[in-house]
Image (tube, rainbow, N blue to C red; front, side):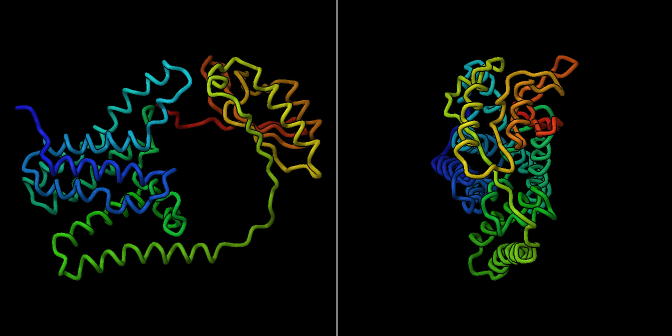
Length: 325
């Protein structure tokens, strides 16, 4: 029998999908994540079997991806954009699996065990989304709070998983408050969930040592179309970056402490061998340059790297660890 969505299910999908999507950066609504899962959790309580809820959760997270994680589809190369479509359709299903699996636990062991299983499975899924060749860590629930500095200070103790767990506890407490608005315990838990992280965040921010000094950083960002960055062998953008950097240094009354060029600013270059004209320019400028580069390794593989060139001729490199699938 084909699965059909009832009107309450459609409302749940829309509220959770849009609410969660708008809570991720760059949208300025991190607080929506505190309640975005409430409609799905209410449906979780009412769903007698796993399949309907799995469908609803998948559609909700698919909507979340459409709102917050559509950007891989805007790649300058159509083939790369098309290759991104499959993971963007599959990952919402992976995120929906904890809802379906936890219904099975709930039906067998009770509501409390089901809720514990739901959160535990979600944390396992986020662990998988954080590591491995198909990692997509932008979707971690804790990242919704990235712009709220007072709250995210607790990440120095718990990491992003702690923020994810906090968001889950907020949503579950709101559900408990909706089920029993006259009870004091859910309201008290809700206040503590807000007060304790904020108190710790205030303590951390007020006890941090004052900075020893400041650096002046010059950021050079050419207004090039996206297609100009797609060809990793095209050297024409270096000429633009050189011109803009020379203009910046000659027009400024004082030299910056660091010059920054964009990601993949340099076309394919051998490992440990930045272009000689660039090294000579950095020596002439007497200012270190931090630039992105596509680096060809000795084993013929490639790295998306950040390369630091110093005026004395020395270099350093960091290779990106998590690539967009």
